[in-house]
Length: 430
Image 1 (cartoon, rainbow, N blue to C red):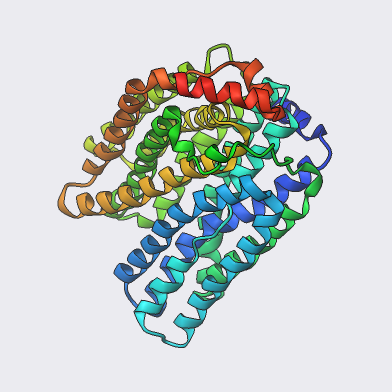
Image 2: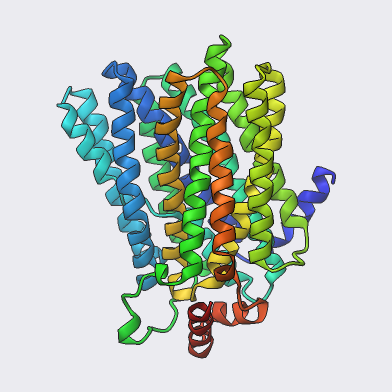
């Protein structure tokens, strides 16, 4: 399909007043988030001379972030996006600024861990944007599908552009420039996002007292999705480290960034095209098909790695492998929205993202160990195995991925008390 036709199809999303404003503001915040990890590694490796320290400090931030994100999501569901995002963004800028100062003035290493761990209040702007789309198009399942696909494409765009921008700032200006820019842009983006009040979803009616503290994980389908997303995060983490190690073994380490960008580009293109398709199967079935496709195409980089293929061939196969991840992620986020009552949208989506973050961290650590002890390319067995595990988890929990269909989903999005009660019964029954 020509690019102009794709753009025209997505243009209808922005007919809703304020949609473009919250999308651009959220994009700034998400771009900053994708810059933080690389910026932190470059900063500490340059100023402290230790990749080991950089990796463990980054891991400390990821671990606490995975815990803090669902807690922030719960607060958003309870008090609203603007009331939570503003103080969370302002608070989160403090430990990141503190980390920069600790590095600048030579503070002990433990202060770096403390600052990284304290930065656990980053608001999940991607999840909140999806929540806004779900509210704006609560009576239009096709538009919601298009919006979820668009959001996944934005995630991949940030994944491609963020690390490149961070490396450019750190290498041309100063090692501190990447993290300083990410902190400033991320804070500004979150505050601008919170300022878009007219597209903010209204708070749903308060649930009965006995259910106010119930976790979304009480819904079996969400547990299946979080575990599947965790395995998918392992796919991302292992692919990244294995690709860097493989390119380094061939004497072209600098090409690793381009190879990873091709993997993300495949996902981005697939996400945009997937949004143009009219869903004809139930979301649970589409999710299983996506997981099956992901398990299949990730055998391609494994074949290239074990066969000693050159970087050109590997790049093409990584692009092909990336095409299955976006449809799986898009459908997974759609399932989160359909399985949960609206009052738990943000917490549920934050839990799904936390699963991915934990998987990326664990996968990166595992792939690093394998890369040091095995022949180049062997590490591609890890993402292939993780994708197979994701498929097995989805198959084992497939009966929990049934949803009540578009009619019930629209009712839940409208936030009537009767519809929410009905959806809780459906979630409990499956």
